[in-house]
Length: 422
Ligand code: LLP
Image 1 (cartoon, protein in one colour):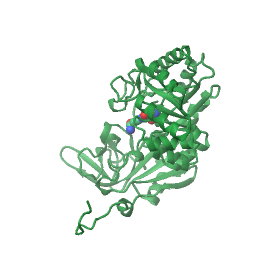
Image 2: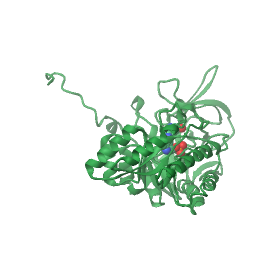
Image 3: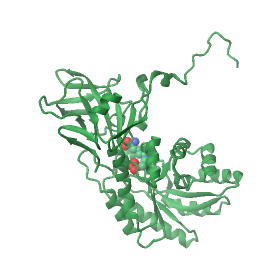
Image 4: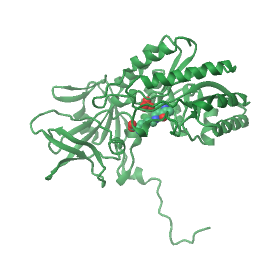
């Protein structure tokens, strides 16, 4: 459930009318609801209250530091995939001891920094990475807490670009080799084996792949115990799907409860989850203005001021996100392709959408709180959109709109007439 709703034919976020926000801050504009973020976060934590757990919100999904701050205050930990994300968490007031570091290609400097601030766990993806972490920890005189990401080889039944737990994906260590890798990790002087980690994909709409993955992980934990390894936590990753259109994913509470059932025999085993989309997607919308309506023999186009550089999911994954006008009326219903001003045929936000709009109207692209702003770019020299955070009737600008100076800040025209120094 989220706090974006129509009242008297106008779309509101919490206690704020969105057309007022669009007018005040301009478009394209990302708008997030604080209450929705917190509600979704609590939907994971509440059912788990009887079991040791840590929700590590996946920073990549929406990494604005105001949002991280709000989740950190609610007690959240964080799943990061880069040194940049670690820095965001720290600047947002997050606790490094609640940070797990995922990702297939961690660099030396990222590992050093993570060891220095004392993160909870490195989710290790390969033997080379284990060796590197061990080496760096030794140099720094530290013990690195790790878990190994295993690839449980279950089919998440989601989009091929976002499935990660199959044998032929680049992620994790194969299930078959896992025991050897854990035993090897345990033999390393500056490594402390803490957990078993997996993440099988994103936008999963069924519980069964999670159940299968957890069963396999628990079988591994039992095996490791027999070998004398004391596994303290299980990290099941993220991946719970959301409703964009007609999907019917389990609720976070149903998902958490199901996991608890499977963990009944393991009362002391800390459970870590890394949800992202399920917390953020429906906590945000992207507002845009209809610039031009163009009708030709085959199609009607609504050319809007947001584009694929602002929200790339439709272009990249053919993802469907709901598009609604901020003011509802049913006077001139027609089918439109909602497209951006970028010079690419693939620059669309939605196709064949039934809308009643005129030029100058505002639209909201829904479910844009996850993988929206974070995947935006400056393609076509477009400044990235501003971001707004709404807390009941309070409106905060949590990222300013980029201007051309921001875009050119790091570029230099060299003195071409000077001889190059080889
Ligand atoms: N943990 C790990 C290790 C991950 O790789 C991911 C997402 C998550 C957690 C969070 O998963 P979530 O709960 O959000 O499903 N850009 C794509 C999705 C890419 C997913 C990447 N990994 C999209 O817009 O659909």
